[in-house]
Amino acid sequence: MKKSVSFLFAFCTLLMTAAQFTPNYDEHKVPDFQLPDPLTTFRGEKITSSKKWIEKRRPELLKFFGNQVYGQVPDKLDSISFALIEQHGVALNGGAIRKQVEVTLSNNKKHLRFHMLIYLPKDIPKAPLFLGYNFHGNHTITADPKVIITKAWNINNDELGITENIATESSRGKLANRWALEKIIKSGFGLATIFYGEIDPDKNDFTDGIHSLFYTNDQARPDSDQWGSIAAWAFGLSRAMDYLVEDPQIGKVLVFGHSRLGKAALWAGATDDRFAAVISNNSGCGGAALSKRKYGETIGRINDFFPHWFCDNFKAFNENEEALPVDQHELLALIAPRPLYVASAVEDKWSDPTGEFLGAYYATPVYNLFGKEGITSKNSPEINKPIQHTVSYHLREGGHDVTAYDWEQYVRWAKKFLN
Ligand code: GTR
Image (tube, protein in one colour):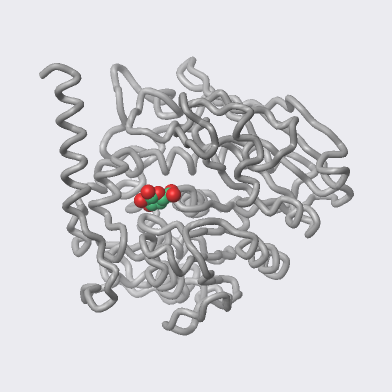
C-alpha cells in the first residue's frame, strides 16, 4: 500500500472508532463491578499493617502498574547534568527569584535536553515548591519577557498562535490563568515548570523524545511492557527532582499535574517517593478515576486515541475492564502515606468526577494503616466544599481546567499537610 493510502486508511479507521464510541454519562448505566481490595494481595493474603503493605502489597501493585499499565523504564541513564542558564534575583516585580535550568540526559551516546523554569519566593530559605508540567512551553505560564521559548515540537493551537508545531512570542503569557503564580509566591511556595514536549512530544511516534535514548540494537519502539509517554513524562519529573533535591534554596516538592499531565504526576508520585505530596487535577481515565465504572472516557477509547500514552500491554484491557486485577484507587494508594489531593470539576464528565472521588475514597484504607486520615464518606461532597485531610478532594464548579480556586485549595492544604 502506498504511504498516503495507508495513512488515509488509518485516519478513516480512527474516525470510525471515534464515531462508534458513545461515552456513558448515566450513573444508572454504570456496571456492577468488583473492585479489587488494596489490602488483599493477588494471592489472597490480607494486609493488616503498614509494614506488610510496604513489604508485600505495595511492590506487587507497583510492578503490575509498571508492566501492564504505564510501562517500565528500561534502564538507568548513563549521566545527567544541570546548567543554570539564566537567573534573576528580582523577578515578578521584585517578589521572586527566577532561575532557568537546562537538564541534559545522556544515554548510549545520545542526549536529550529539557528546560526547567523556577520561581522562588525571596527571603524564604528552602521554600517548598510545586513542580508541574505545562502544555505549550514555559513562556506560556507568565508574561515575564525573560522566559526562554521552547524549540521543541508543540501541538498546534490557534488561540495561542502555534501553527507550525513551534511556539513563538505570540503565546507568551497566554496560559497564565492556569498558574496562580503571584498567589503561590506570596504564600511562601516556589513553582517549577517544564514543557512536557521536551521530554517526549505528545504524538504516536517513538523515534523522538526520551525513549530513543534507551533503544538497544535496532529497536524502534518500546517493548510491550516498556514505557509509553505517560511513564516517560513521569520519568522526566523525577529527573527534574534530581536537580531540585540538590538546590539548597528549595525545600519539599509537591508534584502537580492537570489532565494527561495529572496522570503523569500520579505515576511520578507512585514511582518516586522523593515527591513529598501529589496533586491530581482532573486527571480522569488512567489517572485518579476508577476504570471499572466505564463512565466518560474508557480504557478502549483512551488507547485508541492516544496509542502512545500507556504500554502496549494495557491494550489487553480495551473494552475488558472486568479483567483488570487492579484499579486506579490502587495507583493512588501507592502514594500513601504522603499527602494526596484529587480534584475534579463538575462539568468535566469525560474525566468522571465521581470515579475520581471514589478513587480517593477507596485508597483511604491504605492511608489509615499509616494512621492518616482520608475520605470517610462514600458520598461525593457538594460543589466547592473541599474535604481536606492527608487524602483530599474537591469538586469545583465549571469545566476541565485549572483555576484560581483550585490553586487556593492546594496552597491552603499544602500549608497544613506538608510536614
Ligand atoms: C483528553 C483525554 C483525557 C485528558 C485530556 C487532557 O483528550 O481524553 O484523558 O488527558 O485530553 O489531557 O487535556
